[in-house]
Image 1 (cartoon, rainbow, N blue to C red):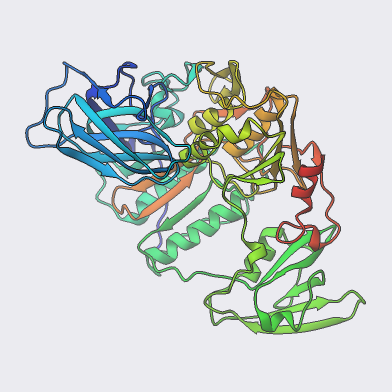
Image 2 (cartoon, rainbow, N blue to C red):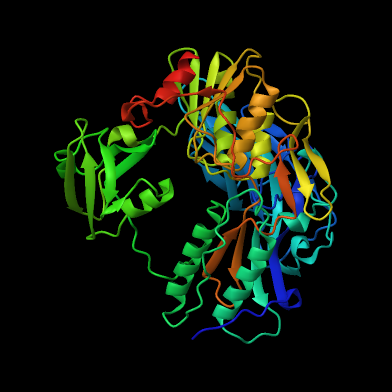
Length: 562
């Protein structure tokens, strides 16, 4: 079956899922909306209660909401604990235990079914006689529900419709041309009054995405690559070819499409390479038998007979990775210029050496340096930093490792920055797609700071895979702190935009990841970093593979010493 695209915006049918929160009770700090679009149930402005000192929690009743007789409300809050064996919440009148937990140390989010009750007693049992912390924040008791809402993205319609963007108190100012609906992270797509096939919807959505892709001028787009049209091999094959088409056309990390129902055989490689100068050097060997045949630092010349001189880094890594039981032939040149060919089979799994495993927890390096690896910009990263705020008071330097961090939530990114930037600040700018107007996104000064030493030196580690909100954090820390520096061996990814997940109405297993529905382009001080990235303040020169992160980690050593 072959088909031809029929394109018209009047046929589009977009929708998003809207979460509605009905608050039965809220804490004495006052009511504030408990829902952030892309981070469930995280409240900015709620108060904090120390359960070691305050044993009774009184919640205020919201008289506008009536209890649901057939549905139990949920209680939600953030819990900060240290050396706590058990916490129990009780009915203040009957003393019946309503909820109990043995918490881990640190900051976690709690959600559980609860009773329609406004006064709660707390019982806390400490774990030993050491210092203990037991604080709860943002207590909420109520109902939540999900509603489907149809709309047409403003970037598609060319209009500016919808409600003003609500940052739930975090932003002091947000541009009026960018609406709440423009920031919905999950969309659903179908064609109105169209009984056609999944392939027709895929073809139509692809056309909409390509028409609205915002970075034709910022990236090198391959206009020669042809969109797949043959559907005779089935949906799985077509979706896989469509994913390859997007990757080869845009080379944009904000683009992919997959079918979650299709079987995927995971590719792997026992051999890793890193480009030093113009040569690809062997930088990792995970197979013991291969380590007897090749050495770290040797030069990879060809893969399966394909010379590497004129192909991209992405293509090299693609050629190295294969499905288990497949074979690969490498041509390698040793330090003396002698060439050899090595043939091997791919295994199902490889044992990862201990020096390849990156630190993820907050840790100290000596007495004066704190280190934290942030893999993703999410509430867990924020909680981790807040949980260690006391330790940071006595540190001279904090190393934030954002290498291979692909970004995350913009609001959480602003909150992480707010821990270090005490005053109101400009987070980024938005450039309207239709009017070219540029306006600021300003973060409020009403937020929590870490209260670290004003002299705290911050070192942000980046690489070519540091993208999106992680780039925003690196840029703003450097901009607003005289003691912050960015350190790396290369520029960041230069991929800064809102990411949408778009599901097909006809097949909810098919999911697009795309930045094509952003009404506005994100700017940093009037400039786009798309395809360019952020240049490190301190460039670390890699001369051999032992300088890389799995080994001596010259970037980290530089951050410690400079």
